Length: 318
Image (cartoon, rainbow, N blue to C red; front, top):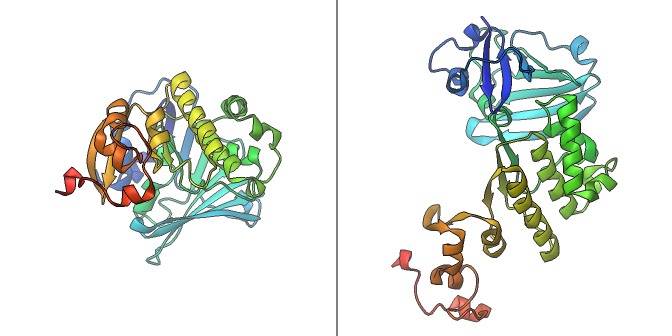
């Protein structure tokens, strides 16, 4: 029995869903059942997951000709190998306990994702719920360290962000990204690994935008960037939020630039939230100004020596 879901505006069809959801509490059921809805038959089909396929050289066009990246999922004790074949992209989910890998194959310009799920009757490994599904749920990520695909061109990296989008949506998304980041358009055919850190950060954000997410997770976007590039990147982040209504969850050590674009914020120490509130309130908080912005009560900048010898203790450590 097939089932369809509406997830963040995507129309997703799972073939043989009754076999995928063997138990009500299975990994697949927990991931998809909250999104069960009556799908509009007139809506274009975004993706079709076909779970009982034979993934072989005949399907992929031969051996992988390039390994693009390996994503470690330590808490799930598995690794995802992301490879390019003559006919499309191959994903190998490899559990570290010796269980069989689970394979996914998506041909170029096709909405079908074929998999050998259910090939031996076992439930999919839990790591499957950690890979790719965040895109279907309307979430995209620009990770710390950027994690672009260095061997691919700028255009190919952006196309990967639209893995679940059709050709027209990818083309429109790419045009929008190039308007935000004209420098990427100038380097469209350049391999991403040869670009500067700032250009790679632009590419990482652009790749997330191609998925047309409702929420973008940004992890340390200023890492390794000059003050000027940091200012430019955060200006574009604010523009994306204002123009597209895309929500942003930002993790950033540079509190000054983060509070300048945020609506609200949380300050954490040792894994605990110690202060929270609106960005305006945090920017004016005496503790935040002294301990995180390096400013005295009167707004004057404080030297490193002053910061090392606080006039008062942090109230949450008292």
